[in-house]
Amino acid sequence: MTVTLEATWLICPGCSDLVFRPKYERALRVCPGCGHHARLTARERLDCLLDPGSEKPVDTALPADDPLGFADTRPYAERLAAARAATGLREAALCATGTIESHPVVVACLDFAFVGGSLGSGVGELVTVAAEKALAERVPLLIVTASGGARMQEGALSLMQMAKCSQALARLDEAGILTVALVTDPTYGGVAASFATLPDVLVAEPGAHLGFAGPRVIEQTIRQRLPEGFQTAEFLLKRGLIDAVVPRPALRRALARLLAAARPDATGGSAGGLTGGPAGAPSSAPTGVSAGAPARPEADGLVRDPSALPRRTSWDVVRLAREPARPTTLDYAGLLLEDFTELRGDRTGTDCPAIVGGIGRLRGRGVMLIGHQKGHDTQERVKRNFGMPSPAGYRKAARLMRLAAKLGLPVLTLVDTPGAYPGIEAEEQGQAWAISENQRLMSGLPVPVVAVITGEGGSGGALALAVADRVLALSNAVYSVISPEGCAAILWKTAEAAPQAAAALGLDARELLRQRVVDAVIPEPDEGAHVAASRTAERIQAAVRQAFEELTPLPVAELVEARRRRFRSFGAPSSEET
Image 1 (cartoon, rainbow, N blue to C red):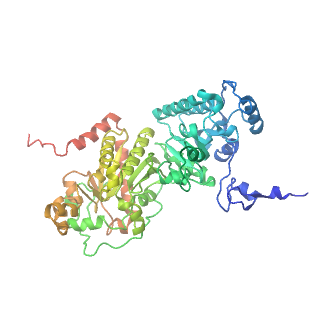
Image 2 (image 1 turned 120 degrees about the horizontal axis):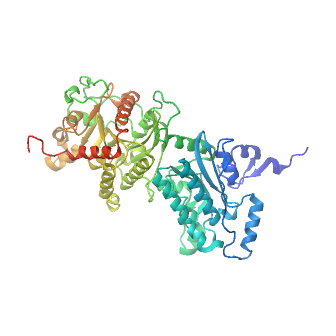
Image 3 (image 1 turned 90 degrees about the horizontal axis):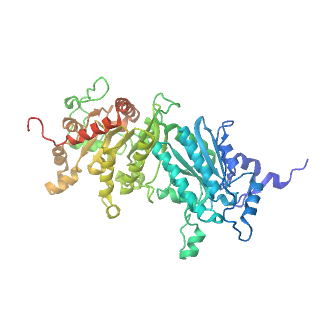
């Protein structure tokens, strides 16, 4: 038996290197050298993603093949016949129900090999029927895209499929059903401008191109030179337009984690103990800080009596709250949650790294986690803008909160910021509008919201994530209308008066509890969260779980009204004053 060279080796279309074909096929047609992802057919996609034996076709009658009797260099009817013969498909989409690691899903998968995966009446009908199937069975919808755009040979009828598919996804939004798009190369035109970009979560393969107009059209139309990597998945991720870039071999597991965590009643995985650890190494407490007497928590581990907290100077607490080694939101995500999936971007062109968020499971319960992210070392803190969000950060948070409301997931926010970014760009992009919109949105969210002040709670930049049913604080956290330095500069006329300003502002946990700004304090073990991250996370987890257990059974109207009463009470006349 003779084995030909072509059967054993192939030339990678990405790097032009020789690749051992069996290894290439085992890697799902991903080049081991350059990582180039070759195209797969719809049939191959379903085989890669769905559990073996779980697939059941979603079939439907299709509309007339050639509504216009269209012909260019070749009659449209002949093109369709050739595509059917070559692919074995009736149309450029294949739809099925199945499971991904036992999680039920409906999949609509486009095939670029069939007339460029173009959106015609047949594809529009198949995608819509898949969405209707997901609605009827109340399971998530996954759309795998690969398309050159709308199908010209069907004229305006093809254009109408964009609206048809978009409204099918709108019905899933109204029903609270998760939608996910897996963007593959290429995805352009009418598909990009409808059902490829509307889903709740957008995941793309490395190097996949996504856009309305293709590079050739742009260059020919406006004679503009395009930047490096234009419209690639990596380009879009940096601009907050997609949530993640996931290599093909990791896709199945990544989608399963998302499907598991996005269920309000999520179960499975490791429900015991905490895993992971903080990104930064623990450090000692700031020089001169006395730990004081330990807090005296109540039976549930929380402190509600201000006198039960250790006495420290306000300035010492400020220094502890700012300790660089304190766990960040991403540290806590790894310690608190199973199957955490970070979601990125505000969907308008920016991803602010000072706010992070995503879906995970808190002891089996699906939750949406959102928080400020400072970082530990200088490089990361600069990258994260020292935890000072831009308007895009607050708009990303708002997007995730709306998704939580749609899916019925409780929201956990972790607050640790000096304040919102005060720069020129932030003002131009509407910083005040973004912060005020978040407060309005949170006041009416129809799901439980718990906020934990984990470090600095600085001004409106903190409050934009803290309009919650329960507001908790770590014992070394601070929360104030302004930084001590800012207050000192304005009222004392010198920033050197910051320690005096800190004392006057009443920003430490004892004072916050006394003023009822926070509902309870979570004692930090040992010298503080920065030297006992895992134990601190255990205490946060216990407090948050208890709060969610108390809040989740409440009717939505009662939940929202109680939240609004909580904030209505601040500054209201007491019974003695009326």
